Image 1 (cartoon, one colour):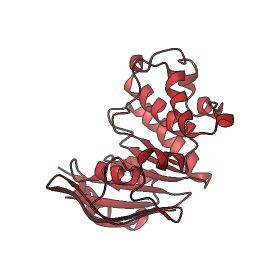
Image 2 (cartoon, rainbow, N blue to C red):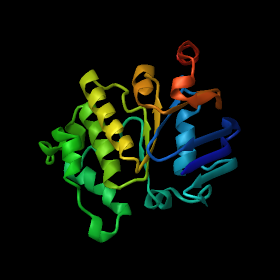
Image 3 (cartoon, rainbow, N blue to C red):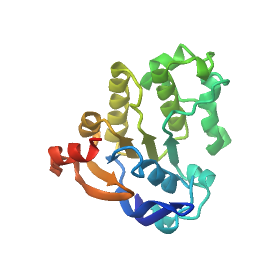
Length: 231
């Protein structure tokens, strides 16, 4: 469904990605791991169109989207939950969720009841401003906002960062549910290995802009992976 093929990405003269390739398919979680600053978020920027690539291709559902603008990729079913959540602090929870309507036909612009089944706390906070929520609540809101878009590819950038353990478990449960339905491809950028190991069907480990280790999650040597993640 998604194929990143030999992508390079630069910030000025600095190279952030070197010949990176990655695949993601429906019904599976593809986890991208690595230390800080190795290019994980840059890879997501290449996939979503937030930053142009210098070389290589991004293929989505059989079409080359390498030069396609971000908003058009969103219309084609690609949703991104960014690191740091980026909820709108002055908008209410309901209004934050409704920003996901932008890519939907008018007849489909409603917040599904399922959002409140997945994240019950949001139903009790619809009138609260996004900036008044805790970090864990904001993360749940950011994921729900992405799901309102009805994506076929869900990209999450370190959803466990700064989150209390109980909400990490809730997020893991939601990811597992979405995966088992088999309708959505999921890319998960993560540094918390135990969380990733429980969810991922495949893993790609990055270092200095390269993917240095990849394969089905159960086939990778755990000690090797942990060594590459340690500071």
